[in-house]
Length: 293
Image 1 (cartoon, one colour):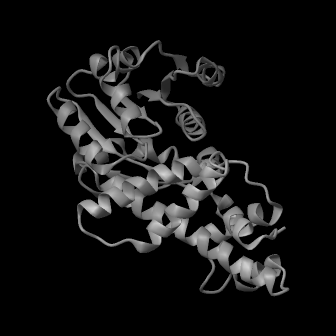
Image 2 (cartoon, one colour):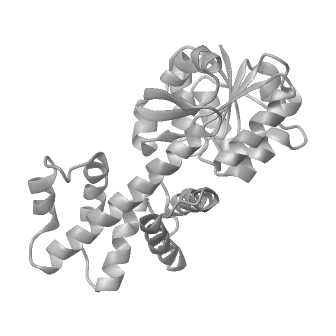
């Protein structure tokens, strides 16, 4: 299959490489030429624009930062839509606003082009080893056509509903992750202040009811004070803003998400927006005037 891949950031590059490893032809494009060259070195073909990529591809995958970025990639001059023809498809794997996904689907449907929103979870390590989780919104027949392709990048690929449902599910995921990291950081702060090493707390409780994938993945970064980004705070802020906007739109109260958002905003104000979201622990260090390490 000829697969266009547009958006070669921390997640997009390893995801595209896994599509290549599965034997598909990948036509790649990014505004950063060095990223494109890195993928060409791995066996991809360089596209010159979104339009060029779409013309050469059966399906185009986008992996962008937010809704406006996806819209620009799709519908700007020389964008993806200009190179699409009836029967092709776009799979947006970005984490964006669900209503934007539905808008894009409606606009592409007029061209005879299918659209699915398929955001992912797992961060850079799982993107590299091909074990991300993919949450898909779209038609059953379109999902069936591209499920195997999505599986080249993932350990699980789940159709959760119509267009937009993938991003609703991703928002739920991001709410849970942010609140989980905050709860872990808060508990470790209590332990440290009370004279118990957080690492010992982790070892004691990780296999019990409090244990989680988030705890396993983020605790080591907290203990080392290593907040090198796998998923940046600024991106989690974007996701929680979309979650809060959506929750307000459907009249759902989300107080824990609101609190997590305020913690992340405080970290951004203090220059930590490029840190990994495990850096939520840094907020607890700041307000409690101590270090968890």
